[in-house]
Image (cartoon, rainbow, N blue to C red):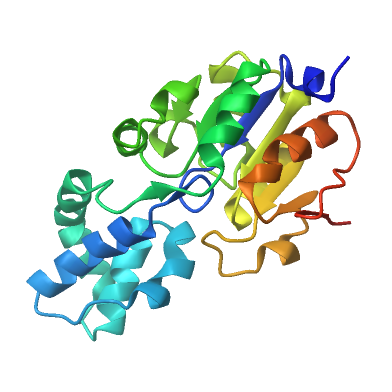
Length: 241
């Protein structure tokens, strides 16, 4: 029996933005398109990147507040439709999968794992992004915030995403980048892998994942190790306690 045999019949649930795809350029670009149209200064890329895990609505509101807008909460609510329209039209202008993602997903899928997107991004925008990046066919399901009873960090999101693809929660691994992913996985009782290059205000290592991943070349080893109850030995994977 090979190490990959552990993947057969398992479910690997993935966050999308900041985990599989570097989507910050287009998300911040859409926020900035709205800010500029309203006569405000745009956000600097590095200024906005860590906050993407909070969601686009919060990011837009924060951008308005940073620019000095009055009542940024109400202003963001009024302008959010414009943001969605712009982002939907430019969802994959600059967004790209992180290095090693495609090969890792193909290996997991070929080994018999079910792959599901578990994201706080709306399902239609998630599907659009994955389709434009020629990635949607790698997944058995795409489960956004609008397709579940409660979104991450509520465990219902992860539980319902696994159920949507006919998976077994007891043989599931969650892969994400931020506290919302960590919260959902811990509450659902699933092993947790976090990447250390995503969108998180809190350093991923401080969220105490089972495995802290530095590169997707090591994702398959990390998943098989956790499903076998072992810790991967690759130097690019760091097990935390």
